[in-house]
Image (tube, rainbow, N blue to C red; front, side):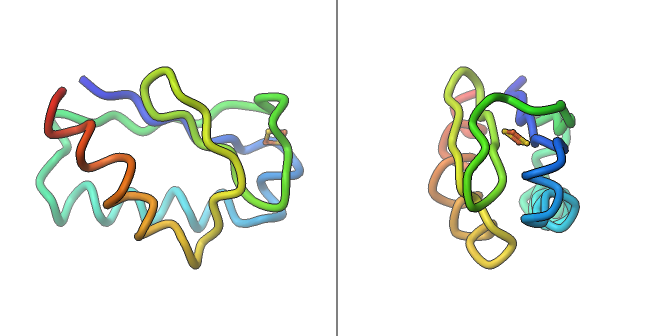
Length: 84
Ligand code: FES
């Protein structure tokens, strides 16, 4: 199981963490990954930036935005989910 953690701390929240989570949820469903990927929220990951912090497995990415969330999903999440 691959764990995706989305920061819902205040900085990430104002940069659209809710929207990013919604986009990931939709794509997880579209790609039929719900038995391989779990999506959870967490408070500040000490990686605040001009976007949302997202941890994929052990790796933390910063600066994800609603506009780039779909590309991020296909570049960073789907390959790891397929290995999970
Ligand atoms: S609020 Fe998200 S990393 Fe700080």
